[in-house]
Amino acid sequence: MIREEYEVISNWKSFNNPLVSICCITYNHEKYIKQALDGFLMQETNFPFEIIVRDDASTDKTAEIIREYEKRYPNIIKPIYEKENTYSKGVKPSLVCFNKAMGDYIALCEGDDYWTDPKKLQIQIESMKKYADVKISFHKAYKEQGEKKQYICDYKKTRVFQLNDVLFGDGGFMPTASIVFLKECIKDFPEWFYSKAPVGDYFIQIFCSKKGGALYIDKAMSVYRVGHQGSWSQNNDNFYKQFLLRRRINNCLRYLNKSWDYEYTKEIKKTITMHNKIVILEVLKRTHLYSFIKKLKLFYIKISLTK
Image (cartoon, rainbow, N blue to C red; front, side, top):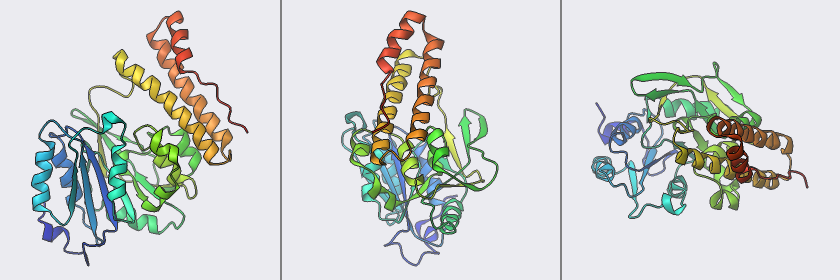
């Protein structure tokens, strides 16, 4: 049973200065948004947190459900209701939440995922404070597909991973709903991140891990919900979108290398090569040789990673 607002804030000194901002983006998640919000509200902390939930003009009852929670938890839930869908116009939905966030830390969770451990935030914040240089933490999670559940990102023991691990992890290294990072990292995001980087948290993971690595906590505290289709869909339209996404990511890795004064050329080049191999293998699975060459020309980018 979900607690009332006075119960949630009972161990807080104040709710005016949240330490953590939970940023939740949602669109047409009426079947799932309650479970996500309940997972936030069950958090037992000795510090204040806020919940910034942004509905991107859902066409179902998602916004209606959020309004019900807003009335019940007016000091905690701070919604953003878009009148028009902004994702379709190229706006990064999470960045809108970040701009509104008041906390020193930002915790991520999309509206169709959810948290399972009431101590999740307390554990992550306390753990991060033990590592002065660490600016981002994450943990293993459950992948839920229908009735099946299995661990993802199970790295066996609590440890600090280095930037190389995050780069080569290709965005899936950290489950989104497990991520907590210091808001101060945002000031280091370059202009191209806002204008050119694809939606997702891959580059957030990279930027936050550069100086102090990424703290992994060996405890499953969230669920990543998987739909009927995987990241490489069986239908060709979605495959082509993934095809173009890889190209965008590789371009952004070029910008990243330049932003970092070519300090990590070797690592970034290796990451781009890995992406190219993934695309080649996926195209080969689906096409004849002539069609494969034609599509490969579309994707292939000549990359110069040296000055």
